[in-house]
Image (tube, rainbow over all chains, first blue to last red; front, side):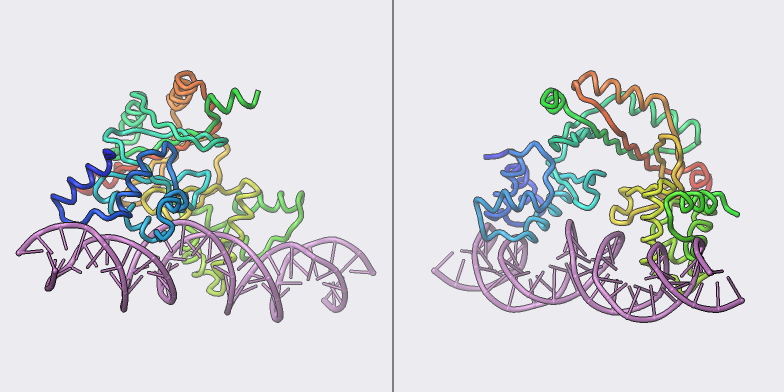
Length: 146
Length: 146
DNA sequence: TTATTACTGCAAATCATTTGCAATAAGGGC
DNA sequence: GCCCTTATTGCAAATGATTTGCAGTAATAA
């Protein structure tokens, strides 16, 4: 069974709620994807297994998972209107989006901390959170375009 | 006359179009604000001078200015749904948003370039663009809360 | 096995932004 | 200064992503 499903079940044990076929399907699917799907894309994929599943169920499940901390979401400039979801990583990280194949790479760099520190000092501010998104072409797409 | 109005008139000269009272008012207002207003906030402010001006005119003017490169826009996580506009700066820069007073500070740091370079090397990717937003408390709000 | 009520599917609502259209008004030519 | 053309406006209706109310379905505790 998928890791996410297990984690969700643990949370249900603690906070109440039910594990339904729809929730299980969404969790399992989410785990196999390495892109950051939008609700609609996820709906499209999940429908192959359960043609009856409704888009609003996707949204409600994602919001539940988000609240439980199992899923996090982001907006990329590329398609500013669609929210994109993925299993939440436990550590702070930032994103690279390949504008050609839409692949997302999660990364971290200690220099991010330095930028925050330098800003705090220069402006006497206090940083609570940082969002970084790099847009470009991934190695695969670079090779292809040659 | 405001700088933005003049720049806009220059562009009208080159690419055609008309300088209307509404456009002038929006441009002048935009210039006096140091926050990054949403279309609705801008509408609210501008209405004091011209109670008849319609929200769709605000949007259309902002889109025109955006296309001309006089205005740029951004989405902050704070209010993910509202697009925020401000006079475009000629140089690349990033944003700090005070989550208390909503003040926006534009900044740049050479370390951003380093992060991009390091990512490019580590993943053999090519970065085209970078978005950074720092969220926190500005110096004024820090002092107030003491 | 049943009873309770959380969850689902569906349709309608919401909210920011966009668009079609008829009316208005810039600004070039007289 | 006045007229004419047509860009721009105001308004109302459309759009598109996400949310919500509600009645029916199904998970789980007893």
